[in-house]
Length: 149
Image (cartoon, rainbow, N blue to C red; front, side, top):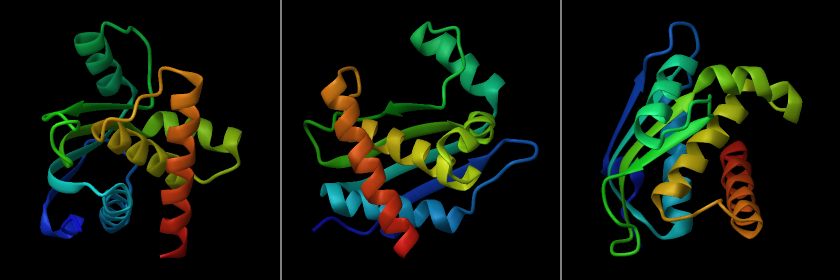
């Protein structure tokens, strides 16, 4: 069994001027997903930010000139190692704008982005209908577990 996420290094940086998420909630969510996916956690940086920051990264690294909800950058290859090592950038503005559309709270929507980014760091892809469906079901699972914890 992988070590708990609390045994590893998780750095949460909130650079958003008004919005935030509880760090303990993020630690729980990461631990649930890592355990559920049988991944250990080496180093994870979660940056909670705004449209401008995430869009700038999207342009700089992916050549996509549009807003996006989350970006993840792996620092290892999940196919070689069952270890999470990477960075997740969450656009809290997008979560605030879209939460009502999905009938969830801002926190739930933002946590979905965190777990989505984490799943990408574990090697999940959402570039096909099947991949999207798989990721959505895994997100739903870990968010439900978080609500029950």
